[in-house]
Length: 244
Image 1 (cartoon, rainbow, N blue to C red):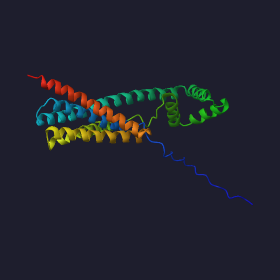
Image 2 (image 1 turned 60 degrees about the horizontal axis):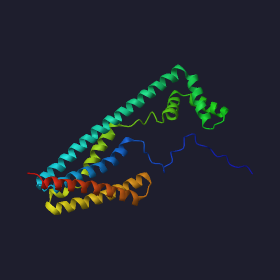
Image 3 (image 1 turned 135 degrees about the vertical axis):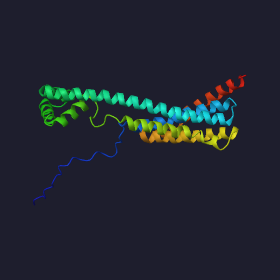
Image 4 (image 1 turned 90 degrees about the horizontal axis):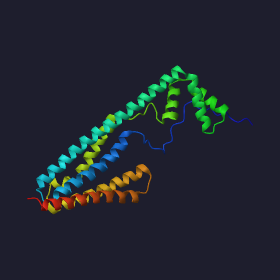
């Protein structure tokens, strides 16, 4: 009995969906931004509240911390990502130049790299020759194997900067909200409650993003948030009490 011929598609297999894209700068900046915004502003707000200042001054401090932190995070993330992408682009340009000037040397270098990873020398030579047939594929292969990057994913400084500013502002706004509607002990308690809830959410998000224990990351985020807020509250109370 003749078995039917199975036609194989020439199209490459789609990427496995259980792997998350973690190389982009925007996701990293967003996660760090929310946490930084929350911890920074709840510390600032509770520090001013501990000094027995007026609710208006606490609001002003919170708004100032939100804006200053968001702009600072955005600028820092932009400069960092821009410098990184420019450095990597320079390395890629140098690699592309070497591929044009000495293709045989680059092919031998790639084959030697495959051999060092346990590939049979003959197979390594064939693999390297195949990769070198197309200039774009050759550059991508050398960039991935030698530099550990993809020419198509050097990071987007504008996306990272925007995500960093927006996420910091979201985190910083959480403990500030009660001070727009109430004051005194009520606002202080609500800031702590909202800050704790936000810390739990951040911990759960980090656990889902990293695949680590949710309980461990939630507890860690709670400890960091509460400790920072508690220290600045006590400092504010001590300084405020001794002001003349």
